[in-house]
Length: 239
Length: 239
Image 1 (cartoon, rainbow over the protein chains, first blue to last red):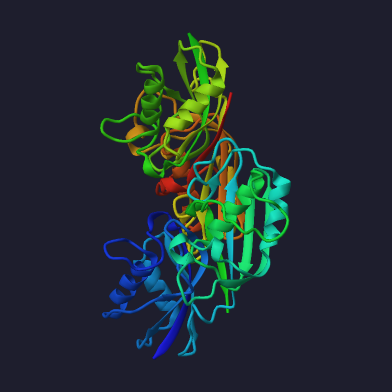
Image 2: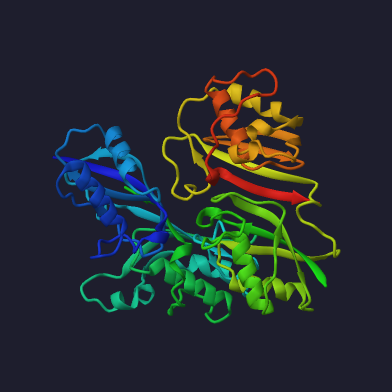
């Protein structure tokens, strides 16, 4: 049995997130449909983690097992021929039989884009959060690095995940940086792993800090509103 | 009566082009619907020219007449509130009563993007022509400037337009330049005006030249296939 790792880019606009759901179009479901068509039997695709509905990926990682001796390049080409154009397989490689894209991931990087100008370009409408209202940029820039380090991020988890028992909410954020590029604020965070909605809640918290509603000394103990999914992109997964 | 000029950006993917057509969603039709809603009666919107279905605009120009004394900034804001997010009014300004966005235009600039890599990014899928097949880049680069100058462009007009009587097919191309940016070929053309399908046919001709099917000495006397609409964007209109 071969273990294949693929790297994927996708525009999440038209999808109900990563995870298979009955009667809804998802990234995982679409990949599994295409692989079943190529292989003639069901194939389970495992991702490095779930992305929410509307969240994008520049380089998501996933894996599946295969008996078929098809060369990797042909497999990639066959998948891209069958997949809709908003999902692309960027590369395919052989891994050890035990490779698990979720548990073997050492770090993930996400980027979140906020557009501050008065009129948002039609070409960016699905990829940025348009927030033209006043923000104290200095507070935002100061607040971003406060997330760095090892913390219990319970307060930044999705409400339905926050009180789930038995799973540690401790994560390590290696870097958490906000930069400004003309009318855009770009938040980039790299960490050992992320809870459900965590990056969107970190961004919501930064916005609250920029509105002056959250203090800028020490690790924030409350979360702002969950920022919209469309501004978020999974930049990469490290193994 | 006021004469208002607006500058528009739009993602043409979901539209059947600029011009109003019964039962189809078009840019002109959508603008007229929104202005009718604001004004309470029908308003005719005139464009600098038609764009084909699927063609985009970074800065299309259009104009309409209005009695309403509404400040320009409020008008722009009201339009953007009612318009779908894939059409944006970038600016609005007062013009003389006789302003005609089509006949007063001195020059237009279009850009056409060809993606040459093996896998096209999901985020560019609606904005580039994916052409990964072999091309002789030197022939392409040499052929692009041959369009410059004043020529009869009949052979580059749409088939249904080519033999129409009474309209001159002579246009002046001020600049016609192909550049390469990594995996992208970017063709930029600025001219006094363009016939229907003309830019897409110029690009189709460049591709034929790159395939070695059209000679590279002198103004081409035959057109290649019409290149797909989605790679084309109207960059700006000069008055």
